[in-house]
Length: 179
Image (tube, rainbow, N blue to C red; front, top):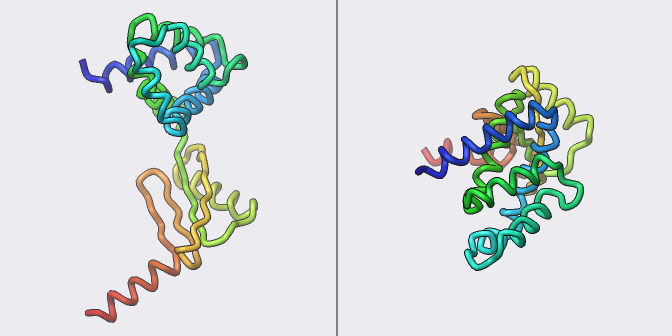
């Protein structure tokens, strides 16, 4: 069976259970932490995929990845179910699917602001409000400093990209001069 289909089914079931228990935002944070753990610690993937490692050890590792002893009982039960069913090789995809489904349910849009220098909190808040007004949703905003853009900013959200950087303008001028 397809990994995507299976992971979405598990994620939907987890989201339904979390919604019924009114813990969907807690589980959302834990699933984001789990997905980030797989990215930050590539050895975690190899360890979880190791058939020689006992399920109890895998359970302990995965519970640590979602927050350790502070993790919710729902996330712990979910990890136990995944391990019982032998689907631990798909748990990263399940976590990512949960995050995606949660964002769709709550109308959360990812936004990213790239600037040449650090911006003030007020400027960041104005950009966030502008995106929220355009999308009619909540925005999870990430700011990034990239001195290569020289000045200005690059704003990305959903499928929209606004490049108001000095670097892109200089490149446009250069292309015009080459013609």
